[in-house]
Amino acid sequence: MSATAKYWRIALGVAVIAALIIAPMNFNRYGLYILSQWAVMTIAAMGLNLTLGYAGQVSLAQGAFVGIGAYAAAIMTTQGMPLIAALGVAVVMCFAIGWILGYPALRVQHHYLAFVTLAFSTLAFLVFRNEDWLTKGIYGISNIPRPNVLGFATNRPLPFYYFCLGSLGIVSLAMWWLIRSPWGRAFVALRENPVRALSLGIDTRRYTLMAFAIGSALGGVAGTLYAPLTQYIDPVPFNLSLSLDLLMMVIVGGSGFFFGPFLGAMIAVLLPEWLRFTEGYYLMLYAVAVMLLLIYSPTGILGILDRYLSERRTKAASALRAVAKSRLETAP
Amino acid sequence: MTAVLEVSNIKKSFGGIKAVDGVSFDVREGEILGLIGPNGCGKSTLFNCILGQLTPTDGEVKVDGKVVTGLRPSELNRLGVSRTFQLLQVFPKLSVRENLILAGQEHQGNMMSRLFGPSDAGLSAAADQMIGFFKLDHLATEAAGGLSYGQQKLLDAAMAFMGGPRLVLLDEPAGGVNLTMLGDLKERLAAINREKRATFVVIEHNMEFVMSLCTRVMVMAEGKLLAMGTPAEVRANPAVIEAYLGH
Image (cartoon, rainbow over all chains, first blue to last red; front, side):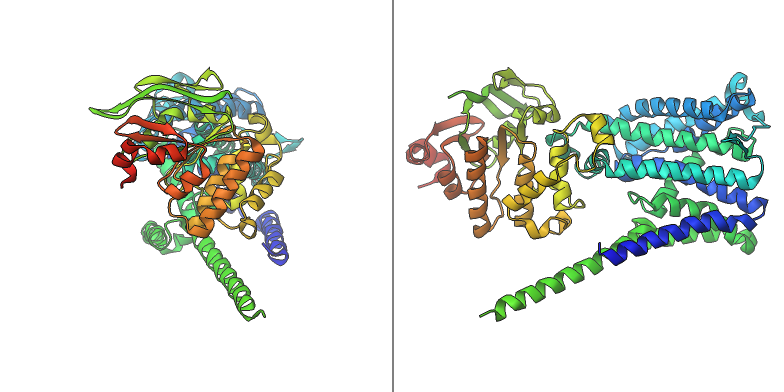
C-alpha cells in the first residue's frame, strides 16, 4: 500500500468515527435506538465473522449466544447486580458453551455442522421459553435498568448510544489485534487448508474450538448490551431467525473481511428503515436487493471492493513487468 | 551414524487392498534418501503413515529413537518432522511472507505469546532469509495464489523448512517444475542438507533429479520394498529395471 493510500484510509476512518459521534446528536429517540441496535448487532456479527469468515466454521447458533448474554444481563441487573458482572458471566458462559459446541466441528463440516448448531439454537430457545423460574418464560423480563458507566447515567438514548458505540470500539480493537496476531493467521489456515495447516504444526483442534468459543463470547457481549437497550426481553427475538439474520449480515457485508460485519449490520438494521416509505413493499425490495447483491458478488459488498483493488494491483504489476522487460531487451 | 527415522514393518490396507505391505527401513542422520517406484506402489501412503496423516494397520515408526506412531501430524511437526505434499499446498490468499511466517509460527513460544506477542511471531527476518534463499525476493508481498506454478512449488518447499526441521519428507518436489527452476531447487535442497544437517526423504519420478541428489535410493513395488542401495546399485539392479526403470 502506498503512503497516500494509507493517509486516505486513516482520513476516512477518522471521518467515519467523527460522523458516528457527532451526527446522532440531533437524532430523535427512534433514530438513536436503531443506531444503537446497529452497534450491538455489529458486535454479534463480528463474533460470527471470526467463526465463519476467518476460521471457516459454519454456525447457526450466534443468535442463541446473544440470547444467553441478554438473559444473563436481564436476570442479574433486575436483581440489582451491576451490568459489568453480568458481562463477565455472559462472556464466561458463552465462551464455555461455544467451546463445547465446537467439538462437533472436529467431526463434521459445512451443512452437517450447520444442522448441529441449529439444534443447539432450538435448544437454547426452548430453555428461554420454558424455564419460567429463571427466564419468566413468554412473559419476559421487563424494567431492565441501564447502567452507570464511569459515573454517567445512560438512561437517556444518547448516552446509551455512546455506551454501545464505545463498546463496539473496544471490541473492534480487540478483534483487529486478534486477526493480525499469529492466531488470526492460524484461523485463516484452518479455513483454507486444514490438512496442510496440521502438517505445519498448527493444532487445528485447539484453534477450531477457540474460533467457536471467542465468536460465541462476542455474541454474549452483544446480548448484554441488547437487554438494557430494549429494557424488555422475551424469548422471541432470540429464535433461529436472529441467527439467520446474523449469518446474512456476515455474508452480505463480506465474510472474512474485517469491516464486513459493520456494513452487513448496517444493511440488515438500517435498510429496512430506509425502505419504510415503500410501505408494504419494503420487505420484498429488501429481499430482492440481497439476492441481486449475492448473485453479482457472492463474497459480499467488500468482495466487490476487493476484486476491484486486486484487479488494479494486477494491472499495475504487469505494467511494471512490461517496463522491466523492455529495459532488459533494449539493454546493450 | 545414528538413525533419525526408523520404520519397522509398516502395513496399511484399504479394504482388501494392501497399499503398504510390511515396509521397514532406517534413515540415517544427514542423508538424502530417495524413494522411487511405479504409480500406486504405496509411496505416498507410506509417507502418510509415517507422518500421522493415516494410522497404519500395523507397524511402528520411531523418530530419534522415540515411538511416534499414532501422534497427530501437528505434534510430529513440532518434534521436528516436516513435509511437503504431492499436490501444491500453499495458502493462496496469504502473501509469500505470511505463508512462511505461518509455517514457522507454531514453533515459537506458546499459545499466549502467539496471541499477545508480535504479529509476525518474531519470524519476519527468518522468513525474508528463506525468501532470499529460494530466490523469491521480488515476490515477498505478493499473494501466493498469484505466483507461477514453479514459484509456488519453491514456496511450498521453503515452508517445510521454516520450523527448522531435522527430518523433511518431500513428496514429488520436482513435479511440474521447469528445468531451470529444477536446478535451483536441487541446489537449494543440497545446500540446506549440507548447512543445516537436515535429513531428507524424497519421493520423485524424475530419475536425473533423484540419482544426482540422493545418497541412497530405495525402490518400492506393490506395497513392498524391492531394493535399497546407492543410486548406481539401484540403477543396475535387474528387479528394479524390470519393475520400474525399464530397459
